[in-house]
Amino acid sequence: MDTKKGVCTRAIVTTIFDQITAALARGERVELRGFGAFTMRRRNAHIGYNPRNGELVSVTEKTKPFFKAGKELRDRLNRGGMKPNRAATTAPAQAGGA
Image 1 (cartoon, rainbow, N blue to C red):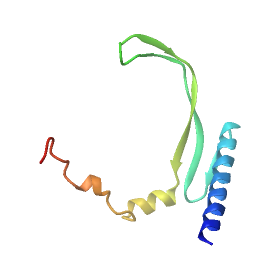
Image 2: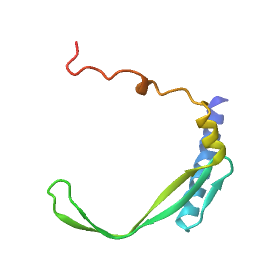
Image 3: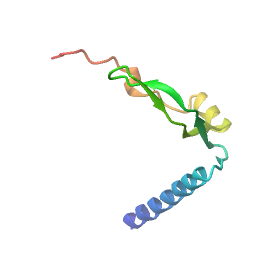
Image 4: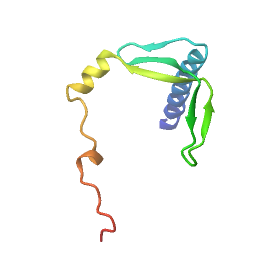
């Protein structure tokens, strides 16, 4: 029975993501109330450089997805609704440690 639930859940999530992706591809804004909004942002063409050899390169115009968290999500996260990330609270490992 759990396998059927997993398959059904996967199909629902995939369908939602496919619909969000299709809407963004059409240039539409997708808002999930209380969670946030997805939009597309245009990056103008510009001259950049190749970090390997420092040569100047022409970078074409691009669009990229952008997510802005909604007020309810921001408020919930900022009032301590999340536990701290364990990696952020532990000291880094010593190099060459034994």
